[in-house]
Image (cartoon, rainbow, N blue to C red; front, side, top):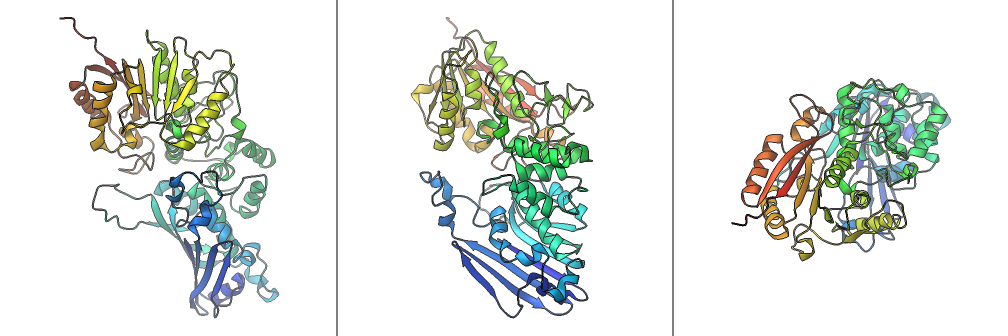
Length: 536
């Protein structure tokens, strides 16, 4: 993880004084297991270039965390990418520049705009290149996004989500650094520390002079604060965020897709719950707005008691009125629409006593199934130990709740291993699961389900690739970094036809979400029904 700051033009040599670091010395400090170095690679009166590099101890990053029992904590990018961690590591080295308090002889240069080139990375962001550019171009920068070459010997992905970003433009050193310290965590969408009211003060301090006029202010604020109560507190102090937005439809659609699909399925963190009368959405993580014309904004989509007005947040429209509905009506996220579609199908089935929710994650869908009359047993199958623990906490809240007809049972399991518990169930659900599996493995998995497990009804949801164009997504990009593929409507129909030829099933494909002519709906739902055995 590194940042390169380069200043060019007359008086560029003053930058070293604004940074309060002697160009003739190498700044090299180790604090709490993190080594931070600053090295001037060029220092003349007309050009100054400084490299800031941080190198944390990867073991220290996970030592003492609640996930210490899980080896997957060591398999992550935190020691490499620029994130909130990186900003915290280098803040001490850049404190003078961030505060704008150099030696008295150089105070006059704090407000001087230099020709700057800022290079930082690697950045692991869920935002597409277009949105990355929209974050920085309003600040006066020309933005370049670079990727390393993918020289895998196998087909992993067409384009890496990890990038290096280069910004070129005129700015003061203080403003440039403050903007980076606010926007780098927005790109990474991760905070390594407890987010409190202090984060609001940081937004005001680092965003002074530029954030109010930024067209993506709402995205920036909500990915910074993350929690509904903090966002509301910010709005009480600074005014409603939605009123400040002038986002283009295409940009906001992309943002909604990022949030919806990165938080989709059962493994979404911070999703609002809707279990009977329970409403604790104040504590849920929120990443973007769902009220404007936008893709992927969870931020104000609180699901309160009762049924909110149905809306497809993928396009920011409510009730199909082209986005002109009253803003007081809460919109419903695409993931909510998936859950409703699945529970509606199951509720209408004549037999639904035994249900298997494969890839149940934290148990959000399984908890909803517990309210469907006629359901007697629910197996919430999930391989992740951490997700099962959260599911157990969620299921515990169901005990004694009015309307609950069956308590979900969290069990460890995977589609890659045969489990006789899965055999002869009434319903099996794969909600946003198949696209996370390599295509070459799917035929074997579907064969196991249809010929060994033999559920009476199999429900499968998966993204509609064609709809990505409605979101203005980049060509060949996926809605989630872990997706192995995404299928068009024709591709899904072809695979369903192939699977049912080898299994005793018929199928019907439906759509979920707002329909757009020529593109269909954002999510595809396949209902496989087992054919009755012929007595002859």
